[in-house]
Image 1 (cartoon, rainbow, N blue to C red):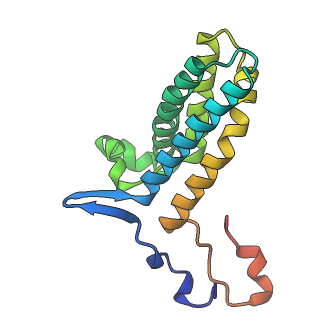
Image 2: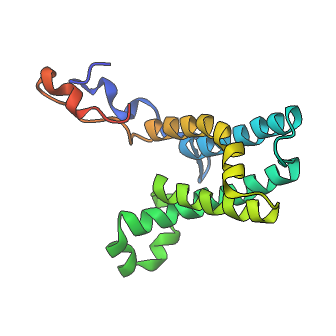
Amino acid sequence: CDWSSDVCSSDLIDPIAISLGPLAVRWYGLMYLIAFGLFFFLGRARVRRDPWRGASEVMLDDLLFWGVLGVVLGGRLGYVLFYKPGFYLDHPLEALAVWHGGMSFHGGLLGVMLAMWHVGRKHALGFLAVADFVAPLIPCGLAAGRMGNFINGELWGRVVSDPARSEEHTSEL
């Protein structure tokens, strides 16, 4: 990739995967779906191969349900509170307009941690036991999310005119 040209422009990949009339399915949303699917299938395999410290398929189903809510609601609430609180105080209904974009990793993480705590209490497991079960299931989903960010044009970094300083300005790529 030649960072001094438009070759790395986010225009190379259309953020919309499929358009069906007024309905547009975006790659970013598909990456969330892939992440949740990977969590489900990898978690099922882990529960079946190794009935791990009280983990069960029922617990996994609860983790998925509450985790999805934690990611989506926590991610959106985090964006609203961490990145544009003034705007959303002036326009509170815009906080519901998720189609305008805006999710926060930090808020999603807090939402998932709350979901893990809730599921742990429901299934009489400590938070750390639930975290130990969940931890190996997360990296594939995070990778899918980063791919969604990349396709959305959010992780391109900055063009630097001095090649000697280029390492100072690389982004998450």
